[in-house]
Image: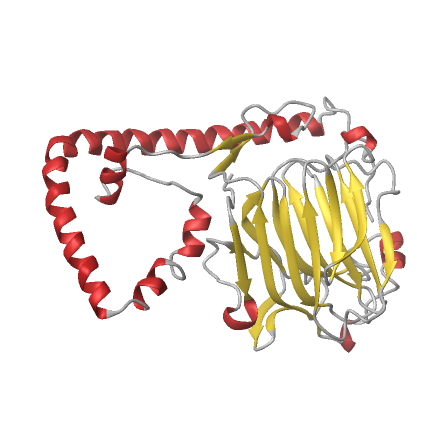
Length: 353
């Protein structure tokens, strides 16, 4: 799975959310749009659950979301980190209350409901934008509102660490109608404050910006070494290192080269090098051009000796990369199958709050 392997800020009040699904995916029914104040997630009818899920994953990290919560009875706004192994860290807001719910799950265990904690805010989160932060390390999880810590959870407090979230998680932002009795159990509707009246909508959550920081420098994460413990120490962290000759071949696009995650490259490519180059003086640009021509001539002499060989290596690496991705998908599916079959001891329970 793709790692973030760095840090990035998404200014959705200026750009909205990219729609090409290279960075964010919208898997659910519901409208995601853009206005001057940010990206909007709108619930208009039963079944709407507009959600933006990041393509990238983080193995410990920091998530800061500046958002304004949706109003409405039974409407839930959420900012979540979640893994494919059902580790999870939550912010959840109920549309007609001034409280905020902090919650976590380890390996999807819903055998008890003592993990969530509500906090009364001194402001209405539906009225204005505020910063909601999750800071997640291998030792503790901290929830902060506008920079002020409101909750800490240590590794040992989560059943001795066995239910501590510790596998690569992606970002999941969205709103849903927990008060829709046609989609949810009565207990969930009651928790959400009652039935949602869609005729009084639409109900909109707005996100101004998102900051994400991965606490590793990985290019990818793999489930290859994972076992029933679900421990972070079993997660394979893949990094890329290139030697000079290989870097030259990369620059000539004779082989597949990725020194950082594909997602981070996609995020940075329009905003990093291109904009920095545009800001240079004409003299500096001319110097770069002359240097580039000189380097090309020297590089071409070297490439003559390794061109054919590197092309063959590139094809083999591409085939190996596809095979590795297929292997990782199979390993993850096997892990999930074993969890569902009960081989890994995880508590039962149909609902979750």
